[in-house]
Image (spheres, rainbow, N blue to C red):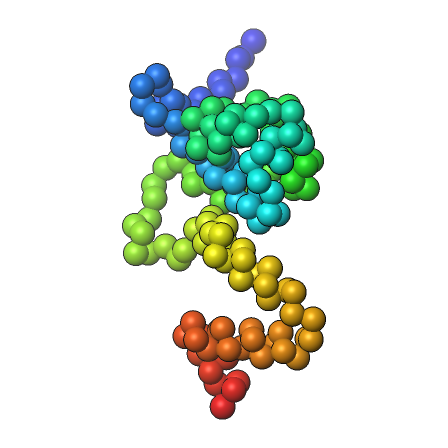
Length: 155
């Protein structure tokens, strides 16, 4: 009989006591925070929805506590995302290109979307009832942000 060998995770992905949170737990927690914030939910409201305290949710979001599979499944249902959402954009083990070689990751873009200021801006934007005013506002913000397409379209 030939036994097949299973390749184990490399040691750098495993967390040991005293070394801080596991990078995977931190990533999953950041994705949890991102989705919660994008939906405009407080930690307290999300915690109530899944039966935990907001303090426990804070620990999940920081990555200091691991999220069990069943809890992750419950969170995905409440947040209306597939479980895989929490692992999207996770850096792979192995060679990493330098920061200068890499475009901003989707996670970095989502992090900027999760800022309170960004969320307030988006919510205010969608409260504009008149579609033509909303379009002009969009074009203005793009032009102010240095978007060349918006500047050339306006000319």
